[in-house]
Length: 453
Picture 1: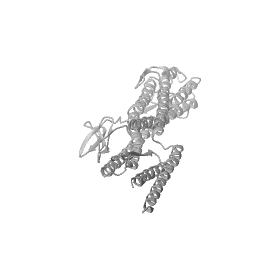
Picture 2: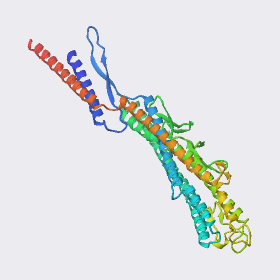
Picture 3: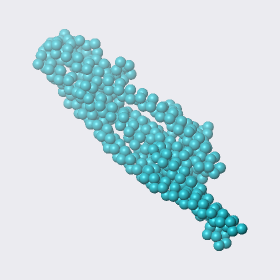
């Protein structure tokens, strides 16, 4: 009977709705899961029939690609500033610390020189000057060593990040393959689509990507400059190489062809490059320049004076950026050999000592800062890193807020609402039971009809 067939199709549709509701409820807390909905439509009838029932046409995945793309972009921004803060925050601490900062060290060095003015020929005071010179050199070397440690850390982290990107690219190409094959056969690949989107979430945190979908359900995932990471079932490989000038460069190999890649890729990978070639490189140049300037200024002034033995002054510092022990070192000069006097026959003459003290406020060329005194350069160094850190923190908070909003917008559409699913469970259960009653009624009518004969 038509009545029974119609009710049977209704029961099947209600069962499909209940299965979908059960799937949504079970995955309410699965990261990246998009709720599903069984789409159904009425079956046409013939002649004077009201219709032939209902059928489930598809299991729809509730997702908006615009919101998903917005979420991926937000992950890239947040990943970029998070990674940048990890490094610039550490640099700010060592540059501004009283125990390691250059300004504090220079203040103590010039304070020891000021103390020596009371008795320029006092050996204890002279020894204190040498000790503070060594302490100052240690500060310069420690900061330079810290910068080198950060450079090594960036190299290691960049290699690890590229390895992760390559692994994810390969997995995403495999997802493309599975999804296109399943959907071509009419199967439901929604769970795989969720997994793929969740992996792109992770990938976009590492590098900024541009994503487009083809008609067969596969995605093309490219860097922001257009080089492909994934195209259909094929994936590329990122690695470090050298450019035409022999400098380190990032390369991408896809289908046997190797391309040069702009290392400002966005995400964590781009942040590593931008920090290394920006803030860190500038800081290293400035610190190195200050170390060179202080060595040259002190040595040049000491050469104009005389020590306690009436001999011309010897250098206090040596500067060699390639010295494995540290770029700034104190020579083996003794306290007697400090040339504080301006005359070879006046031991207590402190005129050259005063000239050494005046170095603190003399303007000299400092890379990245221009012409300024060592004192001003030290303060400018702390200020420069502090400003960079605070600006990045502001950007990080903004990126975090944008990411939260993007996630909220995505979830408001795609995430499972348990209250809604509870209502659906009641509605579709009632629909299922109602269709069974229709079937029972139809069966009773058919039985009654047969009883007439």
